[in-house]
Length: 241
Image 1: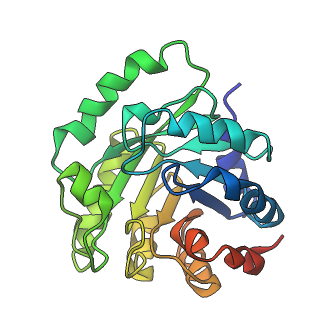
Image 2 (image 1 turned 180 degrees about the vertical axis):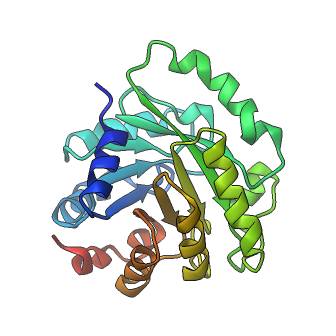
């Protein structure tokens, strides 16, 4: 039974917010995973995202397998490429970079993923991925050879997110990028949320409890934090259950 997306919808209906911890297989060292997961399990996190823009072959599967030994939380793939797909996870965000104009990341990669997904137990969740300018070039820009939508072009961002919903996406992900100088502005989150009938994920540049709560208050259903934990694992202490 596919449960990750239905659990997200149920949590939203109950007025609960989600917190996803993003773990990059190329940055997480095996020897540090045990302590990292102990802190994660004591936090408010209810989802684990695994993935990155550039990841070595098989690194994702190795990491997901190891994470499974430490937690029962759902593990959702956040893949930068088809090489990051593994049946060891529970679900995959089937990301379409709808803010970019590179057909490879709109549909091309997805076509190549089909053969890997056939017969897989992964729950596939179509997700509209919207990259927003944050003050510096991100790994996503370099890899996909696309440009983010300028943060001042609020209506373009709103319309792009809504177009994703109308195309049949089940989630919209507003992304400032890993290590962003600035998170997605509250105004943008609010305006996008007002237009959507599907869950909204917000990530990139969130490094404090205040920024987390600001994203929630303005409409984020799930907030994703990655770099903040990579830089300072003690940040978990601020997010205990």
